[in-house]
Amino acid sequence: MSERPTKGDSGLDVRAAAARSLVPILTDKGSLAGLDEHSVIARDRALLKELCYGTCRRLPRLQALASRLLKQPFKKRDADIQALLLIGIYQLLYMRTPAHAAVGETAGAARLLDKEWATRVLNGCLRRLQREADALQAEVDRDESVALEHPQWLLGKLRSAWPEQWRAIAEANNEPGPMTLRVNQRHNDREAYLQRLTEQGLDGHLCLHAPDGITLTHPCDVSTLPGFEQGHVSVQDEAAQLCAALLGPALAPRPGAHVLDACCAPGGKTAHLLEQFDISLTALDSDNQRLAKVDDTLGRLGLSAELKHADATTRDWWSGTPFDAILLDAPCSGTGVIRRHPDIKALRRKEDIRQLAKLQQRLLDNLWPLLRPGGTLLYATCSVLPEENAAQIDAFLDRTPDAHATTPHDVAWGEQSGTGRQLFPDVNSHDGFFYARLEKRTA
Image 1 (tube, rainbow, N blue to C red):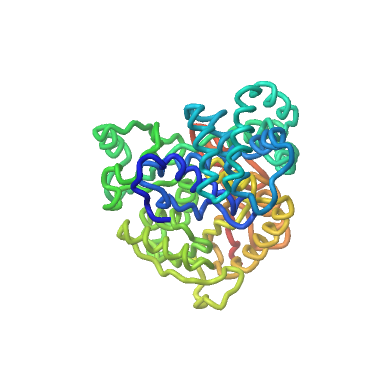
Image 2 (image 1 turned 90 degrees about the vertical axis):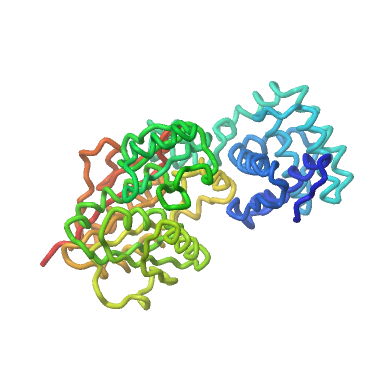
């Protein structure tokens, strides 16, 4: 959609754009990765993002309320109207949007979707919610999965895996994650960069666990970060930054080490390793578009790597020279980063976990022979599910005699899980992450 200069209808435009953006998620045909913020005028882009991400974050509860407000569900072809209803409920319950705008402009947006008939339905549903909000919320919240805003299957898995932490994990998933920076030590130490932020009017604090990390008090546009375009700083979660520290003992003593980043996109860990160590790095990814983003990131930072568009479950891309270290940041369920990708609540299915575990197994078995004796493989996921993490690594160790775990357990972050280390999402700190460091025995 081209930008519309008309001032009076931008409230309708942004809600219609949000509804269109949510349709692929509600119909299981896309994700928030495809959100086009430029589909609305500049001043409405933050609102568009809030409507889409916020609606997905609260989706199980919004859907339960919508089912109480409707006399009968919308037809499949009217998923855009369903999205408008969810957007309207979200505004009334979770945003400071004036009620007249949350109701009137949400209902009116149906006209921009060429569904005039829906304005009366939406208006009636949202006005009823205004009148009966407390009673309706109390009714739907009797269902634990609605109250905690997670699919029932996922809550069951969390409860089974982490009987003491499952509720805190779910609650952390429901809050937006903080914006954390990784300071490029080639340009600044983080104390000096924190001072630069303060001078720019941006508040933050040093990360507790990541030695290059700063967490901002309030998110900001990257264009306001001093030195961003010059490569002085990047945006990266604290848990993801721990990768470099874990690989440090293998890389720091070996200048020119031959390193593989097997599933590299979007390139944050690739860049961090290159910032920290004198290495020759091959960055592999099966998605060419995402690989292009890695190239852009390295270009901004003034770094270089050999980029390969290839599948890490095969070896037809491999030169035959063994690697000194391999980073396998494996495809996973993303259950540790739901707060950053709330559409996972709608898109992920219980049966996906088994398929992802099979893929992770194939990746481990395929890449291990590419590692030299004495080399290190770091396995990482942004998942909190043991099938993808501790159980996956335990099974690998059982079938791989020349592999043994060297994951440190004397660190202040996470907790021991099998032979690895599990971090849970923390409201004011890091995402959920799992790490296991493995070394190949020498003969």
